Structure formats: structure tokens, C-alpha cells
Image 1 (cartoon, rainbow, N blue to C red):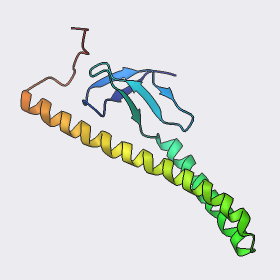
Image 2 (image 1 turned 135 degrees about the horizontal axis):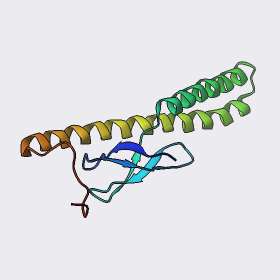
Image 3 (image 1 turned 90 degrees about the vertical axis):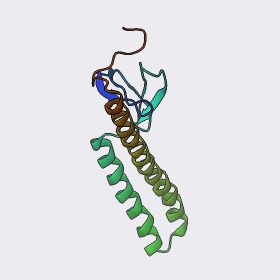
Amino acid sequence: MPKKNMICPECGGKFQSEASMDWHGFLHTECPFCQKTSKYPLEQGQKMAYSFMLVFTFITFVVPLYHGAWKYAISALWGLFFVASKLDESYRIEKKQEEAVRKAYMNREREGEEENLVPKGQD
């Protein structure tokens, strides 16, 4: 995977990293500043794919209900819960990251630090 520009949601440090992706599509990487492993939100294309899956799964839930096949509708309900939970998880991670970046920016502004920080051990 190519290196991506990342911002740590814990400390707000900016760095480039080769993030690993889990099977749900979330990126994981370790911050060189605070050494914490963080999970990053889904990218735009992945959110769109999950949104299409949500609509398709909703259709596979409604159509069997309309025809009276409630057993099939129940199995589609599990898919609805899964896809909706992944979109919600991405939204929560995004909000957490935005808050951490805002907080880190305000701390740097107060302390008068430069924008480009050097990771620990690379002074």
C-alpha cells in the first residue's frame, strides 16, 4: 500500500505511513509521535460502496416481507445491521479524529510550536 498522509487522532501529529487495512476497509497505523495504533475512517469510495450495500440490503429485506416470506427478511436484517454499524463506526471515528486534530491545533497555537513536528527519536 502506498504511503498516505495521516493525522493521529490521539496526539494530532502529522506523518506519512503505509497503513494496513482490515477486512472491513478501515485503515490502521501506528503514530510515530505517541506510538499508539489508531483506526481511521473509511475513505469516500468505501463509504459509497457501503451505502450501496445498505440500499441493496434494505431492498432484500422489504421485498420478501411484501411477499410474505418473513424468514428471508430476517436474514437480510442481519446484513442491514452490519452495514449500518460499519457506516456508524466510520462516522464516529471521523468525529473523534476531527476533535483530536482541533485540540492538537489549539495546543500548538498556544505553545507556539511549528506545524511540522519531528517524531520522537528522530531529532
